[in-house]
Amino acid sequence: MPPIAVADESPRHVIDRDTDPDEWWRAVYTNVPIITQLDDGASPIAGGIGRATSSPSAPGTVTDLLDLLDVRPGHHVLEVGTGTGWTAALLAHLVGETGAVTSIEVDSAVAERAAKNLGEAGVQPRLVVGDGANGHPGGAPYDRVHVTCGIRRVPYAWVKQTRPGGVIVLPWCPEFGEDHSLRLVVTSDGIAHGRFPGYASYTLMRSQRVQPWRTGDGTRATSQLDPRIVWQAPPGAHLAIAAITGSRSYAEEDDGELTLWAIDPDTPGRWAAARSAPGDVGEFATYQVGDRPLWDEVTDAYRRWVAWGEPGRDRFGMTVTPDGQQVWLDTPQQVLARELRSTAAGAVHVHRAGTPAARPLPRAGPGSPPRPARPCAECGTRGYPAVSHPDQSVTSCPYAFAETRYSGWCIGAMGGHRAIEAGVEQARVACEDRADQNFLFRPRPAPLSK
Image 1 (tube, rainbow, N blue to C red):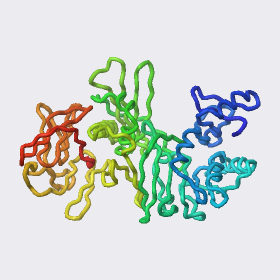
Image 2: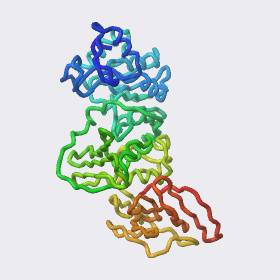
Image 3: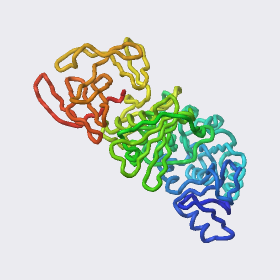
Image 4: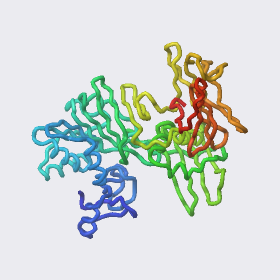
């Protein structure tokens, strides 16, 4: 640890080993990150002001990720993000004399300091200066890949350079609410699958940083969903919203008034803000900029998460292929996506968000939804019509999933399911089996294709 650094605790403050050794030692042994670089080195660390761009993570988070990684003696390990060299030294200890550690760092100044630290500690991993997103083919194949920077999109290079059965552990940081740890296992077909076991939030990989969002003229409206509910929702909700919308978030609270922003990370001119002020009941002010209705998408994603039974983040997973990454719920076959896909006559058609997610019609049978079917606005493929709900205007996708104009949800499904009760907190349906007239009441998740 350098003699001067910044303790990333509240309030954030500079620690100096020479002028206040007691505080320096207290901070470095506290479970908080210690910032060692600001603004890629452009701002002096002694000033304590700027964006953190390099830091040893909180010891508790480091041990959590190392536990997930499960490094064994003799393993060959790739570390992405050398930093101070602390975790490279830990990995070198874990793999022992029969293993090997390759650690890659994008910042040459940071890498130089890490080499000095490791040399003084008598540890000699292989140190490489470069973009960790490309991995390091020269040391492949690896048994383990340990990532020490926040990742929005998992580079396939890491999967390609990991042997079958190998493990990749990283902080998945879409930056909507709370971020998440991700543990992937590589299979023999060159694909990685895994789940989100807990919390992890790291500084984003430099090549995956997002552009600052821009101001602009927008549209004022109101929302019936309190943004405070979204912001205070459990991590599973934040993960679902991030996966479905691809947006990141930012929140400010002042005198009891909360403003929540949803921002398109790839297009800085697209964003939305929703405000929850003391005394607001039923309607909350929104402001949307750009040609994408981001707050509407966030609202829709949150309600879908509720309709699925409010799953925790441990029920979500990710698959990484050469074509990219997909987040899913419970199984890799149930993919969350902003675009809705359906298969008809062996072809895949992409339906834009907001249009009915038409699917091939199954054979008619007892309790089958009535025809005629409703066409997709994009291609004309026919799906099932909307489920009706008393006194509310309803739009829907097929398989009887429908969102009401108000705050409720009508949930139905195949086999004569019909919605009888709507509510954001719990969606319940009556399942009427017309063949034997048996009735049962249970929560039912909405189809993931919507």
